[in-house]
Image (cartoon, rainbow, N blue to C red; front, side, top):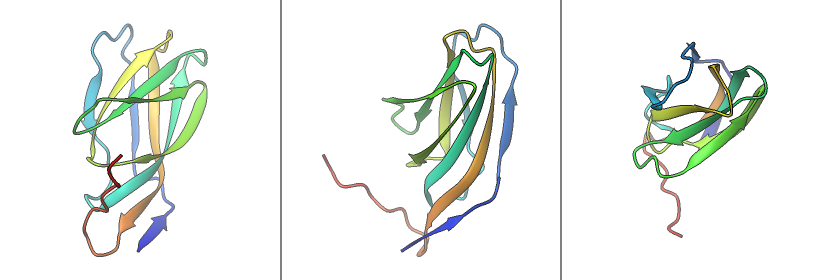
Length: 111
């Protein structure tokens, strides 16, 4: 059973120009969160952001500028963000989330 909470729980800004290495940080969501509705605002608008979800960081979710939102799985609260295509800064907002009601993570089926 899951529930959706629609509140902005995190606002993060980055003003790093020419970022060579991805930034790593924790999303401001509870550990029981299984998916989050994330909005990323990119400056300048022609840029994009690549979001890598932990713990594997093996595939990126692309957020093109000026603003994009996606529902992304959250196997971990730790994420990496990489600025690409001329992006200089970004802002992340958590617009909502889906939590496991019993406090446990819901496992994705194996592929």
